[in-house]
Image (cartoon, rainbow, N blue to C red):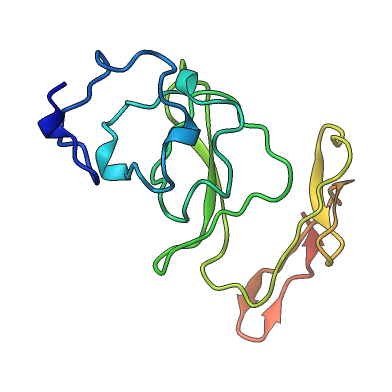
Length: 168
């Protein structure tokens, strides 16, 4: 490499290529903090097989630096997942069907205007066939048999009179 491309403060663009650097020749200790910016990394240049298992954590990623991520595998998390809304819509979680069947989804979405925090605690087991999910009014959900309720039908035969209601 011509020395004219190397100065005390920089190396000119394209002066060093992967063909010039041997594998493992540059290690993290050789790089100054913030020496490589996002505008200097080509798309798809960093892949999962090039990252050490603990190379990325909350201390290494600035807020807002990852947008529209796509992960093609399972994610295992510990703690709380937050799905925040925007100024025009509330947060939502979309659960898609099997890809062999299409792209239909079930969406869980928060109301756009919530008066206070709401927590739903799911039951510890599945209900029986025909049971419904009910709340105790405090966010604790359980399965219960739906009550067989009826309704009354009243027939008005003329102004001011009606037939006796009967259960349907």
